[in-house]
Length: 104
Image 1 (tube, rainbow, N blue to C red):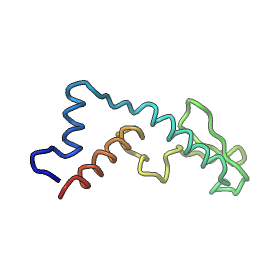
Image 2 (cartoon, rainbow, N blue to C red):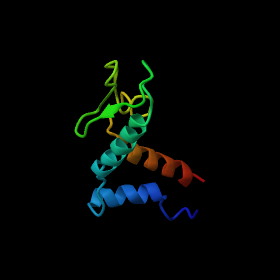
Image 3 (cartoon, rainbow, N blue to C red):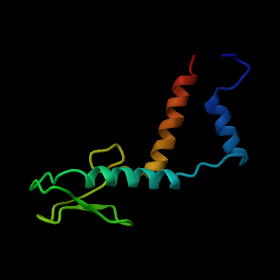
């Protein structure tokens, strides 16, 4: 990489500061939520072994209709107990990975 050209991460940061691009994690949040809920709904209950679990749109809860076991759809993922939303988490990871890849 040329020393007179900024790394991609730095250029991206400059464009964001200028308002040329905007990071919107909300679409990513919806995609992550939908995919994780689908995975949970296809699993059997870890508590009683019931064939499937339930999830509602607009709720982060997953539950078993037979034994009333409950959890959140982010359990067992890097998003669990994070102060960042899944979309913010993914954007941060992408920027971090880009920074590592930009180092020569």
